[in-house]
Length: 164
Image 1 (cartoon, rainbow, N blue to C red):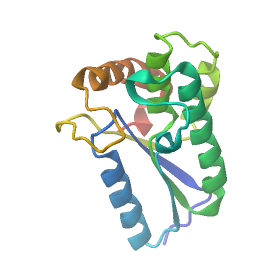
Image 2: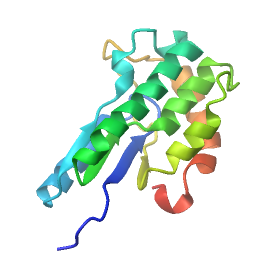
Image 3: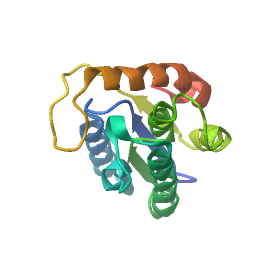
Image 4: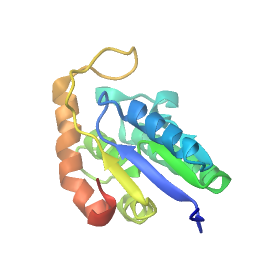
């Protein structure tokens, strides 16, 4: 059996309502069945007290980014594999959208560096209709905006050999 020399980090990214949570849970379960210790980082935006979706502000999305990094720092040393439902890359897309595509808090260098800490980034694309869950937006236009920002930003944030 191969031994892990350091914790691995795998992020499932994309806009909302595209089954990231389902895919991330399935991957985490598969890794556990393969004998690896796994921690799961859930989507932090659901705990955001400052607002989400189309009405999010730069500050509320900054809260999400900082919370994402904090969660990863806490969970990473606890297992051989950390699986996250979102990464800083897709949360950065929501931040840019909330800030009118301007990096108002000059966090891009942090996001660029942190994006390099993922061993694998799995990008899911919107291939299903949005369904109301009582939390996330059901606006196709909003999801399309996030997807367009991701299309632009992701190649600059994630090494090609780590992006699937």
